[in-house]
Image 1: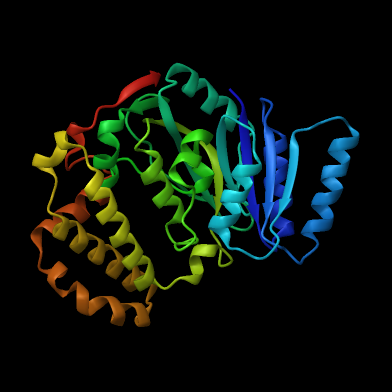
Image 2: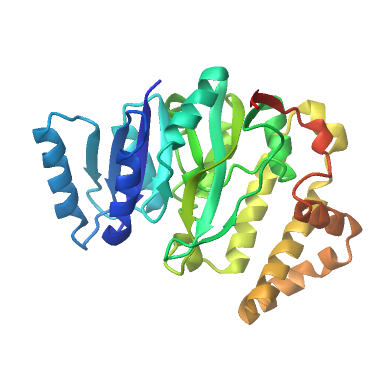
Length: 323
């Protein structure tokens, strides 16, 4: 089993160096592919130097790709995967980084369940000074467990099985290519979630209850450029797509799509209120009025707040791989 870490970057050399260092310090051998979306901040010169340094040392693990024109995040991810040669792709944005044993732990879990198509782990949210702010929650029991393909979309629909951001996720390269890669029309606004939805059609999912990744929360993050109302609208599209893919075995006990849509509207309205984002409050509030009076929407919201342990959780099979 060979891993390729695909790092996407654009004009963030000061952060990119940390991401590359975390990739090169993995405790098992891997290929490192850096896909550059036409950076203008010295990234090209630095990566050409890195490539020459690795070539002179006889080490073929480092690959540098630069887009011919600025193409956006999703297209850059796709270009990086095409340049890779690994069996598994570990995604990494330039402002995030990995624990040294990230790939080793993922490889160990995959070896115990080779039917998997996608793997996720716990991530720590850090600030610009690398101070930990929070962690994504533990899921299920054991250090690692797998969920059968037939249960994945149901779990995603009710947010019982959130795969998380790119820094948490790895997937089989052949499956990624079969799905067509990331959708450039979404470009940093759920393009990753859209990809996880597609990949989950082709195999089981593994979740590792160990912090193996670090995600930087800061104003320069790509998702900060989208309004909350736009993020809500994309979330609605994602839920509709997942809803259509839920396995027949779960059809009798899933909520109505309208209730799920109302839950999302409640969620993003509360986010806007917490942020005191009055522009977003005004744009979301009118469409959220039916949601405010929906008992089912509030039920789904409370279940999500209770660490995804209630609604429908008994319907998802979780098989422990590593205790």
